[in-house]
Every structure is written in structure tokens, then in C-alpha cells.
Image (cartoon, rainbow, N blue to C red; front, side, top):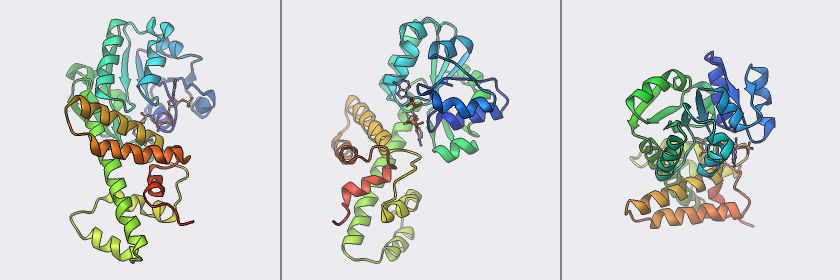
Length: 284
Ligand code: NAP
């Protein structure tokens, strides 16, 4: 497992819990310590991890990080015969490009982006979306089943990533939209409990609103499962994919601006519901 951050660490625990032999590597070494006490080997470099293992799962931040760990000269030399499953959220175009480069080095790249966050990663209840051939899925299944029971074959490399982005568009869009409604309700002096009651009883309700309500009302954004900076990265990937596909990107451009402003305000590491502070600045 390459990348033991917020998501990679619990995934690594699931693999150990399922009885797999595991080697981990993380750029910042501190994040692998707890895993060693559970029986994981720690590699000193990504190429050492790749060299030791027939299967390589990656959960790093983005495609640039993925390229750095898999395709630097030393790692590239170890990729022959390796089966790599990328689980991070990157762009469909990026996934296909990386797939070609891994193939040229003699390895195989498949993908399994996930829906759900740290609690679901811990409990093995992630929704798993696989991109690759049916043969690759059959081989990868025993590993991926450690992460969740819902493992869907979406299509070829890039298509599962595209599905993941369609869902993250809804995370950004719905949360921003809810922030505008909640901000308006608060500024107009409405009873927020009543606003929520009406909303919950309507066809407009989405469960994510209740998940973020307390954080927004109390402006508590610490200990995030999914930081605002990652959502900004995903909206950038969406803009790129939508532009390539000839879709209107104006809404995505606006969402990106809201999130960029949040990052400029120092909220990049905060929970993404902190976009509420951009939409409805705290009264001074
Ligand atoms: P995270 O805690 O920030 O972890 C990012 C990981 O990438 C860390 O291990 C980090 O290493 C590593 N990394 C970053 N740049 C690197 C580089 N240049 N070279 C090598 N390693 C690098 O984030 P996360 O929440 O686990 O997210 C990982 C991926 O999963 C992202 O693509 C995210 O969009 C996706 N995802 C997240 C969630 C969620 O709820 N959090 C849900 C689904 C999907 P360091 O420890 O050294 O910084």
C-alpha cells in the first residue's frame, strides 16, 4: 500500500485484518508507525515496496503524486509484472495516460476509486467502483473485498474514475447549494429547525445536508474526514473532464472559485463544509 494518509491507513489496517501480508510506504514516515505494530513491513522507498509485492495499491493525493511514486526512474524499473490498483481520485484522462505509462514499463494499471470516507474505510463499508478488464477484476477481487461488500465493475480504466467524479460533483454542488439556503435562512432570522423540518419533508432533501448542518451552524470544521483542499482538487478534475467532453463548465468554475477562496482563507485542511464561511461569512 503506497500512501497511508487519512484513507490509506485504514485501508492498510483492513488488509492486515483480512490476513494479507502487507508492505507499506508513505512519504512522511510517521504515518506508518501504527501499522508496523499490527504486522506491516515498512519499505524505505516506493520502489522497494513495488519490488517486494506483486500487487500494489495506491492511495496518494493526486495524479502528480501517483506519477512521482510509480514512474520515477527507480520505480519504473520495478514495475514489470506488477499489478497496480489506484484507489485515489484522479481524472479519467490522467488515469488512461498513467495506464499507458505503466503498461510501457511492463506493469498493469487498474483503478478502484471509492465512495465513503474514513469511517467507512475503517469499517469496511466503502462503495467500490472498479475500472479494468473482467479478468483483472477477478484477480483483484480477493484484495478489494477487504474494503467493502459493494464492488461494482464500472468499465475500463478511466470509467470508474469518471463515475467517482460524477458523484463528487454532487458533493460540491449540493453542499454549496445547501450553504446558500442555510445562510439565507439564518440571515433572514428564520427558525433553522423549522427550515430543516420543511426541507426534510420535501423531495429536495439530501441526507448530506443533515451530515453537515451542525458543522455549518457551529462553524466547527476541525478533524475532517475529507478536507476542503481535496474537494477543490476534485472540482478541478471535473472542470477538466467536462471541458474535454464539451459540457458547459460555468457552474464548476464558480464552485472552484468558492473553494479557492476557502483555501485562501486558510481553510484548505478544514472539513469541506467550511465553504459555508465563504458563502455566509461569520458576522464580525
Ligand atoms: P491525505 O490524508 O491528504 O493523504 C494523501 C496521501 O498522499 C498521503 O499519504 C501523502 O503523503 C501522499 N502524498 C501527497 N503528495 C505526495 C507526493 N508528491 N509523493 C508521495 N506521496 C504523496 O488524503 P486522503 O483523504 O487519504 O486522500 C487520498 C486520496 O483519496 C485523494 O485522491 C482523495 O481525493 C481520495 N479520497 C478521499 C476520501 C476522504 O474522505 N478522505 C474519500 C474518497 C477518496 P504525506 O503523508 O507525506 O503527506
